[in-house]
Length: 400
Image (cartoon, rainbow, N blue to C red):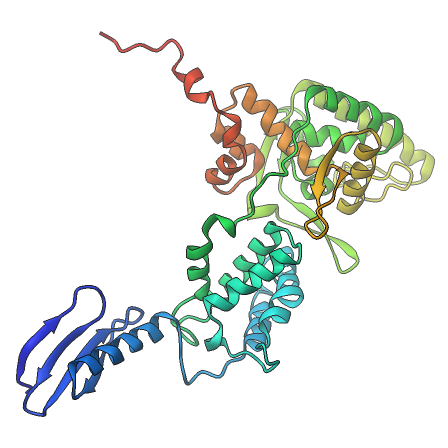
Protein backbone atom coordinates (compact mmCIF):
# COMPACT_ATOMS: atom_id res chain seq x y z
CA UNK A 1 0.00 0.00 0.00
CA UNK A 2 1.45 3.31 -0.98
CA UNK A 3 2.21 5.83 1.69
CA UNK A 4 -0.20 8.51 0.52
CA UNK A 5 1.35 11.64 1.99
CA UNK A 6 1.25 15.19 0.69
CA UNK A 7 -1.83 14.48 -1.43
CA UNK A 8 -2.57 17.30 -3.93
CA UNK A 9 -6.11 17.25 -5.35
CA UNK A 10 -7.16 19.33 -8.32
CA UNK A 11 -10.75 20.35 -8.89
CA UNK A 12 -10.36 21.71 -12.43
CA UNK A 13 -10.10 18.41 -14.27
CA UNK A 14 -6.29 18.09 -14.09
CA UNK A 15 -6.44 15.04 -11.85
CA UNK A 16 -5.15 13.96 -8.44
CA UNK A 17 -1.45 13.85 -7.49
CA UNK A 18 0.25 12.26 -4.51
CA UNK A 19 3.71 11.14 -3.43
CA UNK A 20 4.53 7.45 -2.93
CA UNK A 21 7.53 7.83 -0.59
CA UNK A 22 7.99 4.09 -0.21
CA UNK A 23 8.88 3.84 -3.91
CA UNK A 24 10.32 7.31 -4.27
CA UNK A 25 7.92 8.52 -6.92
CA UNK A 26 4.94 10.74 -7.61
CA UNK A 27 1.66 9.39 -8.96
CA UNK A 28 -0.85 11.31 -11.02
CA UNK A 29 -4.35 10.01 -11.69
CA UNK A 30 -6.94 11.33 -14.13
CA UNK A 31 -10.40 10.05 -15.06
CA UNK A 32 -11.18 9.31 -18.70
CA UNK A 33 -14.30 11.48 -19.27
CA UNK A 34 -15.61 9.10 -21.92
CA UNK A 35 -15.50 5.73 -20.14
CA UNK A 36 -14.96 6.69 -16.47
CA UNK A 37 -11.74 4.65 -16.11
CA UNK A 38 -8.85 5.95 -14.04
CA UNK A 39 -5.51 6.48 -15.78
CA UNK A 40 -2.28 6.61 -13.74
CA UNK A 41 0.96 8.40 -14.61
CA UNK A 42 4.27 7.96 -12.70
CA UNK A 43 7.41 10.09 -12.31
CA UNK A 44 10.12 11.19 -9.97
CA UNK A 45 9.07 14.84 -9.86
CA UNK A 46 5.64 16.33 -9.25
CA UNK A 47 6.02 18.82 -12.11
CA UNK A 48 6.86 16.07 -14.61
CA UNK A 49 3.85 14.01 -13.54
CA UNK A 50 1.55 17.03 -13.74
CA UNK A 51 2.69 17.79 -17.31
CA UNK A 52 2.37 14.16 -18.38
CA UNK A 53 -1.12 13.89 -16.86
CA UNK A 54 -2.31 17.07 -18.57
CA UNK A 55 -0.96 15.78 -21.88
CA UNK A 56 -2.77 12.48 -21.42
CA UNK A 57 -6.02 14.28 -20.66
CA UNK A 58 -5.61 16.52 -23.71
CA UNK A 59 -5.04 13.47 -25.92
CA UNK A 60 -8.23 11.91 -24.61
CA UNK A 61 -10.27 15.08 -25.04
CA UNK A 62 -8.89 15.68 -28.52
CA UNK A 63 -9.97 12.21 -29.51
CA UNK A 64 -6.48 10.94 -30.22
CA UNK A 65 -5.95 7.19 -30.41
CA UNK A 66 -2.31 6.50 -31.33
CA UNK A 67 -3.02 2.86 -32.26
CA UNK A 68 -5.91 3.48 -34.67
CA UNK A 69 -4.96 3.49 -38.37
CA UNK A 70 -8.41 4.06 -39.87
CA UNK A 71 -8.28 6.35 -42.90
CA UNK A 72 -10.75 9.20 -43.21
CA UNK A 73 -11.70 8.34 -46.81
CA UNK A 74 -12.38 4.69 -45.95
CA UNK A 75 -14.36 5.60 -42.85
CA UNK A 76 -16.54 8.09 -44.73
CA UNK A 77 -17.14 5.61 -47.55
CA UNK A 78 -18.24 2.99 -45.00
CA UNK A 79 -20.48 5.57 -43.32
CA UNK A 80 -22.29 6.20 -46.60
CA UNK A 81 -22.84 2.45 -47.07
CA UNK A 82 -24.30 2.23 -43.56
CA UNK A 83 -26.98 4.78 -44.50
CA UNK A 84 -28.61 2.61 -47.17
CA UNK A 85 -31.44 1.66 -44.82
CA UNK A 86 -32.42 5.32 -44.46
CA UNK A 87 -34.89 7.06 -46.77
CA UNK A 88 -33.48 7.01 -50.32
CA UNK A 89 -33.46 10.82 -50.41
CA UNK A 90 -31.47 10.93 -47.14
CA UNK A 91 -29.03 8.32 -48.40
CA UNK A 92 -28.53 10.20 -51.68
CA UNK A 93 -27.90 13.43 -49.77
CA UNK A 94 -25.25 11.86 -47.52
CA UNK A 95 -23.61 10.21 -50.52
CA UNK A 96 -23.51 13.47 -52.44
CA UNK A 97 -21.91 15.50 -49.64
CA UNK A 98 -19.38 12.78 -48.76
CA UNK A 99 -18.21 12.02 -52.29
CA UNK A 100 -18.33 15.58 -53.64
CA UNK A 101 -16.95 17.54 -50.68
CA UNK A 102 -15.81 15.59 -47.62
CA UNK A 103 -13.56 12.92 -49.09
CA UNK A 104 -11.83 15.33 -51.52
CA UNK A 105 -11.16 17.79 -48.67
CA UNK A 106 -10.32 15.44 -45.80
CA UNK A 107 -9.12 12.30 -47.58
CA UNK A 108 -5.47 13.40 -47.73
CA UNK A 109 -3.02 15.52 -45.74
CA UNK A 110 -1.27 18.58 -47.11
CA UNK A 111 1.61 16.36 -48.26
CA UNK A 112 -0.80 14.20 -50.26
CA UNK A 113 -0.69 11.13 -48.02
CA UNK A 114 -3.97 9.55 -46.80
CA UNK A 115 -5.25 11.22 -43.63
CA UNK A 116 -5.91 9.04 -40.61
CA UNK A 117 -9.12 9.53 -38.69
CA UNK A 118 -7.25 10.17 -35.43
CA UNK A 119 -5.41 13.07 -37.09
CA UNK A 120 -8.59 14.90 -38.13
CA UNK A 121 -8.67 17.86 -35.74
CA UNK A 122 -10.97 20.82 -35.23
CA UNK A 123 -8.36 23.16 -36.75
CA UNK A 124 -8.19 21.10 -39.96
CA UNK A 125 -11.97 21.02 -40.26
CA UNK A 126 -12.35 24.73 -39.61
CA UNK A 127 -9.63 25.53 -42.16
CA UNK A 128 -11.53 23.62 -44.85
CA UNK A 129 -14.77 25.46 -44.08
CA UNK A 130 -12.84 28.73 -44.35
CA UNK A 131 -11.46 27.57 -47.71
CA UNK A 132 -14.96 26.77 -48.95
CA UNK A 133 -16.13 30.24 -47.95
CA UNK A 134 -13.16 31.84 -49.74
CA UNK A 135 -13.98 29.78 -52.84
CA UNK A 136 -17.44 31.33 -52.90
CA UNK A 137 -19.49 28.38 -51.63
CA UNK A 138 -22.75 29.27 -49.90
CA UNK A 139 -22.95 29.17 -46.11
CA UNK A 140 -25.83 26.73 -46.37
CA UNK A 141 -23.59 24.25 -48.24
CA UNK A 142 -20.83 24.60 -45.64
CA UNK A 143 -23.36 24.07 -42.86
CA UNK A 144 -24.70 20.91 -44.50
CA UNK A 145 -21.16 19.59 -45.03
CA UNK A 146 -20.43 20.21 -41.35
CA UNK A 147 -23.61 18.44 -40.23
CA UNK A 148 -22.84 15.44 -42.45
CA UNK A 149 -19.25 15.18 -41.19
CA UNK A 150 -20.36 15.55 -37.57
CA UNK A 151 -23.01 12.86 -38.01
CA UNK A 152 -20.43 10.50 -39.46
CA UNK A 153 -17.86 11.18 -36.73
CA UNK A 154 -20.45 10.51 -34.03
CA UNK A 155 -20.53 6.91 -35.26
CA UNK A 156 -16.75 6.66 -34.78
CA UNK A 157 -17.08 7.09 -31.00
CA UNK A 158 -15.70 5.22 -29.07
CA UNK A 159 -14.30 2.73 -31.59
CA UNK A 160 -11.88 5.07 -33.38
CA UNK A 161 -12.01 8.41 -31.54
CA UNK A 162 -13.11 9.55 -28.10
CA UNK A 163 -14.43 12.97 -29.06
CA UNK A 164 -16.05 14.51 -32.12
CA UNK A 165 -13.80 17.39 -33.30
CA UNK A 166 -16.78 19.01 -35.04
CA UNK A 167 -18.08 20.01 -31.61
CA UNK A 168 -15.03 22.22 -31.08
CA UNK A 169 -15.51 23.79 -34.52
CA UNK A 170 -19.09 24.65 -33.64
CA UNK A 171 -17.95 26.12 -30.33
CA UNK A 172 -15.32 28.32 -31.99
CA UNK A 173 -17.30 29.47 -35.01
CA UNK A 174 -20.81 29.59 -33.56
CA UNK A 175 -23.24 31.50 -35.75
CA UNK A 176 -20.50 32.17 -38.33
CA UNK A 177 -20.85 28.53 -39.37
CA UNK A 178 -24.62 28.61 -39.57
CA UNK A 179 -26.19 29.78 -42.78
CA UNK A 180 -27.61 33.26 -42.32
CA UNK A 181 -31.00 33.24 -44.01
CA UNK A 182 -30.91 36.66 -45.67
CA UNK A 183 -32.21 35.46 -49.03
CA UNK A 184 -35.77 34.58 -47.97
CA UNK A 185 -38.01 36.26 -50.52
CA UNK A 186 -41.62 37.16 -49.71
CA UNK A 187 -44.04 38.27 -52.40
CA UNK A 188 -46.40 41.16 -51.74
CA UNK A 189 -50.03 41.22 -52.91
CA UNK A 190 -49.25 43.00 -56.17
CA UNK A 191 -46.52 40.49 -57.01
CA UNK A 192 -48.81 37.56 -56.21
CA UNK A 193 -51.49 38.92 -58.52
CA UNK A 194 -48.95 39.55 -61.29
CA UNK A 195 -47.38 36.10 -60.91
CA UNK A 196 -50.67 34.20 -61.05
CA UNK A 197 -52.00 36.27 -63.95
CA UNK A 198 -48.86 35.77 -66.05
CA UNK A 199 -48.54 32.09 -65.10
CA UNK A 200 -52.12 31.44 -66.21
CA UNK A 201 -51.60 33.14 -69.57
CA UNK A 202 -48.04 32.06 -70.40
CA UNK A 203 -47.25 28.69 -68.74
CA UNK A 204 -48.66 25.36 -67.58
CA UNK A 205 -47.57 26.10 -64.00
CA UNK A 206 -50.54 28.17 -62.83
CA UNK A 207 -52.34 25.28 -61.03
CA UNK A 208 -49.28 24.16 -59.05
CA UNK A 209 -48.30 27.76 -58.21
CA UNK A 210 -51.79 28.46 -56.93
CA UNK A 211 -51.72 25.33 -54.76
CA UNK A 212 -48.22 26.27 -53.59
CA UNK A 213 -49.46 29.62 -52.35
CA UNK A 214 -52.58 28.37 -50.53
CA UNK A 215 -51.06 25.31 -48.81
CA UNK A 216 -47.31 26.10 -48.34
CA UNK A 217 -46.52 22.57 -49.54
CA UNK A 218 -42.96 21.88 -50.62
CA UNK A 219 -42.35 21.39 -54.34
CA UNK A 220 -41.69 17.66 -53.90
CA UNK A 221 -44.95 17.28 -51.99
CA UNK A 222 -46.84 19.16 -54.71
CA UNK A 223 -45.38 16.94 -57.43
CA UNK A 224 -46.38 13.80 -55.48
CA UNK A 225 -49.92 14.69 -54.37
CA UNK A 226 -52.73 12.69 -56.01
CA UNK A 227 -56.48 13.13 -56.34
CA UNK A 228 -56.94 10.43 -53.69
CA UNK A 229 -55.26 12.78 -51.19
CA UNK A 230 -58.12 15.31 -51.49
CA UNK A 231 -60.96 14.94 -48.97
CA UNK A 232 -63.72 16.92 -50.68
CA UNK A 233 -66.18 16.60 -47.76
CA UNK A 234 -63.77 17.84 -45.08
CA UNK A 235 -61.98 20.27 -47.37
CA UNK A 236 -58.52 18.87 -46.62
CA UNK A 237 -55.47 17.67 -48.51
CA UNK A 238 -53.29 14.98 -46.95
CA UNK A 239 -49.55 15.40 -47.43
CA UNK A 240 -48.19 11.87 -47.13
CA UNK A 241 -45.44 11.66 -49.76
CA UNK A 242 -42.83 13.65 -51.62
CA UNK A 243 -41.26 13.32 -55.08
CA UNK A 244 -37.54 13.70 -55.68
CA UNK A 245 -35.32 13.22 -58.71
CA UNK A 246 -32.32 10.88 -58.59
CA UNK A 247 -30.34 8.79 -61.07
CA UNK A 248 -32.38 10.05 -63.99
CA UNK A 249 -35.80 9.21 -62.59
CA UNK A 250 -38.41 10.48 -60.15
CA UNK A 251 -38.99 8.54 -56.95
CA UNK A 252 -41.70 8.87 -54.30
CA UNK A 253 -40.90 8.83 -50.59
CA UNK A 254 -42.27 10.14 -47.29
CA UNK A 255 -42.35 13.92 -46.77
CA UNK A 256 -39.41 15.67 -45.16
CA UNK A 257 -39.01 14.65 -41.50
CA UNK A 258 -41.37 11.74 -42.21
CA UNK A 259 -44.28 13.85 -40.98
CA UNK A 260 -47.68 13.18 -42.58
CA UNK A 261 -50.04 16.12 -42.18
CA UNK A 262 -53.38 17.49 -43.39
CA UNK A 263 -53.91 21.05 -44.64
CA UNK A 264 -57.22 22.88 -44.85
CA UNK A 265 -58.42 23.97 -48.28
CA UNK A 266 -60.74 26.97 -48.46
CA UNK A 267 -63.86 26.72 -50.72
CA UNK A 268 -62.31 28.74 -53.56
CA UNK A 269 -59.43 26.27 -53.83
CA UNK A 270 -61.75 23.26 -53.77
CA UNK A 271 -63.81 24.80 -56.54
CA UNK A 272 -60.65 25.53 -58.53
CA UNK A 273 -59.45 21.92 -58.14
CA UNK A 274 -62.81 20.59 -59.36
CA UNK A 275 -62.63 22.77 -62.48
CA UNK A 276 -58.98 21.88 -63.01
CA UNK A 277 -59.70 18.14 -62.85
CA UNK A 278 -62.54 18.55 -65.34
CA UNK A 279 -60.10 20.31 -67.70
CA UNK A 280 -57.50 17.55 -67.31
CA UNK A 281 -60.10 14.87 -68.05
CA UNK A 282 -60.97 16.72 -71.25
CA UNK A 283 -57.33 16.98 -72.22
CA UNK A 284 -56.91 13.29 -71.47
CA UNK A 285 -59.65 12.35 -73.92
CA UNK A 286 -57.98 14.55 -76.53
CA UNK A 287 -54.37 13.47 -75.99
CA UNK A 288 -54.82 9.86 -74.88
CA UNK A 289 -54.39 9.69 -71.08
CA UNK A 290 -56.76 9.07 -68.16
CA UNK A 291 -57.17 10.94 -64.90
CA UNK A 292 -57.70 8.47 -62.03
CA UNK A 293 -57.81 8.71 -58.23
CA UNK A 294 -54.14 7.74 -58.03
CA UNK A 295 -53.10 10.13 -60.80
CA UNK A 296 -50.86 12.97 -59.74
CA UNK A 297 -52.77 16.23 -59.62
CA UNK A 298 -50.13 18.29 -61.39
CA UNK A 299 -49.41 16.94 -64.87
CA UNK A 300 -48.20 18.05 -68.22
CA UNK A 301 -51.62 18.84 -69.74
CA UNK A 302 -50.58 17.62 -73.20
CA UNK A 303 -48.88 14.33 -72.29
CA UNK A 304 -50.38 13.43 -68.92
CA UNK A 305 -46.90 12.80 -67.47
CA UNK A 306 -46.08 13.78 -63.90
CA UNK A 307 -44.66 17.24 -63.38
CA UNK A 308 -40.99 17.11 -62.37
CA UNK A 309 -39.72 19.14 -59.43
CA UNK A 310 -36.87 20.47 -61.59
CA UNK A 311 -39.27 21.51 -64.35
CA UNK A 312 -41.42 23.44 -61.89
CA UNK A 313 -38.39 25.20 -60.41
CA UNK A 314 -36.90 26.15 -63.77
CA UNK A 315 -40.26 27.20 -65.20
CA UNK A 316 -41.05 29.46 -62.25
CA UNK A 317 -37.57 30.96 -62.27
CA UNK A 318 -37.83 31.82 -65.97
CA UNK A 319 -41.28 33.34 -65.57
CA UNK A 320 -40.50 35.44 -62.50
CA UNK A 321 -37.33 36.82 -64.08
CA UNK A 322 -39.24 37.67 -67.25
CA UNK A 323 -41.94 39.61 -65.37
CA UNK A 324 -39.55 41.35 -62.98
CA UNK A 325 -40.18 39.40 -59.75
CA UNK A 326 -36.57 38.74 -58.84
CA UNK A 327 -34.03 38.68 -56.03
CA UNK A 328 -30.46 39.94 -56.07
CA UNK A 329 -27.53 37.59 -55.53
CA UNK A 330 -23.88 38.58 -55.15
CA UNK A 331 -20.86 36.85 -56.63
CA UNK A 332 -18.25 36.69 -53.86
CA UNK A 333 -15.43 36.11 -56.30
CA UNK A 334 -15.80 39.32 -58.32
CA UNK A 335 -18.11 41.35 -56.10
CA UNK A 336 -20.72 41.76 -58.84
CA UNK A 337 -24.43 41.17 -58.32
CA UNK A 338 -27.22 40.05 -60.60
CA UNK A 339 -30.96 39.58 -60.49
CA UNK A 340 -32.38 36.07 -60.78
CA UNK A 341 -35.87 34.61 -60.79
CA UNK A 342 -37.29 33.19 -57.58
CA UNK A 343 -37.98 29.54 -56.74
CA UNK A 344 -41.15 27.74 -55.55
CA UNK A 345 -39.91 27.84 -51.95
CA UNK A 346 -40.52 31.60 -51.95
CA UNK A 347 -44.25 30.89 -52.29
CA UNK A 348 -44.00 28.75 -49.17
CA UNK A 349 -42.35 31.67 -47.37
CA UNK A 350 -45.01 34.01 -48.75
CA UNK A 351 -47.75 31.84 -47.24
CA UNK A 352 -46.06 32.13 -43.84
CA UNK A 353 -45.63 35.91 -44.05
CA UNK A 354 -49.26 36.51 -45.11
CA UNK A 355 -50.78 34.36 -42.39
CA UNK A 356 -48.51 35.58 -39.61
CA UNK A 357 -49.54 39.11 -40.57
CA UNK A 358 -53.11 37.86 -40.09
CA UNK A 359 -52.21 36.66 -36.55
CA UNK A 360 -51.95 32.93 -37.27
CA UNK A 361 -50.48 31.23 -34.15
CA UNK A 362 -46.92 30.05 -34.66
CA UNK A 363 -47.82 26.51 -33.53
CA UNK A 364 -50.51 26.31 -36.25
CA UNK A 365 -48.03 27.53 -38.87
CA UNK A 366 -45.57 24.86 -37.73
CA UNK A 367 -48.13 22.12 -38.37
CA UNK A 368 -49.05 23.44 -41.81
CA UNK A 369 -45.42 23.88 -42.87
CA UNK A 370 -44.52 20.38 -41.69
CA UNK A 371 -41.65 21.45 -39.45
CA UNK A 372 -40.46 18.82 -36.98
CA UNK A 373 -39.65 21.43 -34.34
CA UNK A 374 -41.28 24.79 -33.68
CA UNK A 375 -37.80 26.26 -33.24
CA UNK A 376 -37.36 25.87 -37.00
CA UNK A 377 -40.53 27.87 -37.60
CA UNK A 378 -39.42 30.59 -35.20
CA UNK A 379 -35.93 30.72 -36.73
CA UNK A 380 -37.40 31.33 -40.18
CA UNK A 381 -40.35 33.55 -39.39
CA UNK A 382 -40.07 34.85 -35.83
CA UNK A 383 -38.90 38.24 -37.07
CA UNK A 384 -42.24 38.67 -38.84
CA UNK A 385 -44.01 38.99 -35.50
CA UNK A 386 -42.47 42.12 -33.91
CA UNK A 387 -45.84 43.26 -32.55
CA UNK A 388 -47.13 39.84 -31.49
CA UNK A 389 -46.88 40.58 -27.76
CA UNK A 390 -48.44 43.98 -28.17
CA UNK A 391 -51.39 42.53 -30.06
CA UNK A 392 -51.82 39.61 -27.67
CA UNK A 393 -51.84 41.86 -24.58
CA UNK A 394 -53.98 44.64 -26.09
CA UNK A 395 -56.87 45.49 -23.80
CA UNK A 396 -55.73 43.26 -20.93
CA UNK A 397 -55.67 44.75 -17.45
CA UNK A 398 -54.76 43.38 -14.05
CA UNK A 399 -58.04 42.40 -12.28
CA UNK A 400 -57.96 44.80 -9.29
